[in-house]
Length: 315
Image (cartoon, rainbow, N blue to C red; front, side, top):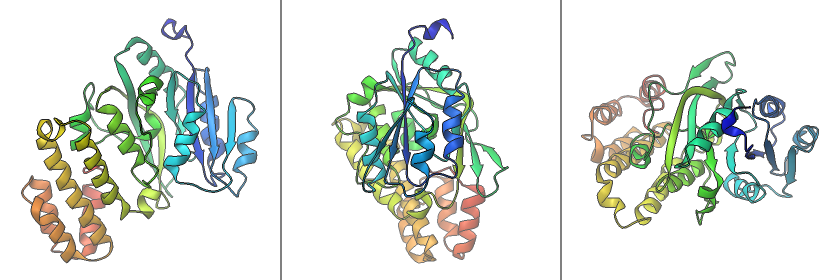
């Protein structure tokens, strides 16, 4: 182990599970394969009905197994799991994703040196399902570091699986995950933390993230603009200076809300409503103007252009 980590700080890894038996062994195996070995898994079984419990409990005492009797919202389940965490640092791994072996060690080493940093994230690979052999690099080029709050209002590059947090910073937040959110609870949580905390970025893929149509972000697409609007309202209330200090970023964020609403309209084959949602923001920049124009075409054309040309550019 590096001298940087000679104090051997504990990392608590939150794994929330709901009927995840298909990929669960791969996920847990990727933790046991870590070069950094001082970790615990807080495994929160959200009333699974498959063999997830048997799989998780078969790994021994380093997997601390907890189970809820009834299924609850993911944010609430994550909050409950975090109350059991004992580590100096906190990471998250969903049960259908996995890490590369150096993930924990690289982040612990950096956070032990950089005491001013509470939030570490990295690049990742996106695994497009069902094309299981299609690995796509998640991020291109350099990413924001330091005071990232304003830049993340413009564009948010963080994948949950790549994050490591300093537990002291997490505990300083009065509210952790919003239990009313279903698709954007992590963005809401991280942005409130990053309002006062600094971030660092590792330009290396340290995780593999499976992308498929059964994900909540795909199934509950109509929830996304509603929750992101709620998040913006929260952020505006965090400090009296936010609205003025971040005026350009907030204006762009509001344009993205218009786009997300239009996206929901297009999924419902309602281009008229999509255009209405885009009208106030069509002159924000060229991309928004082009999206507005495309909304005059059949919905299938808009979906095609979004999926193949603009995917990930407005999140």
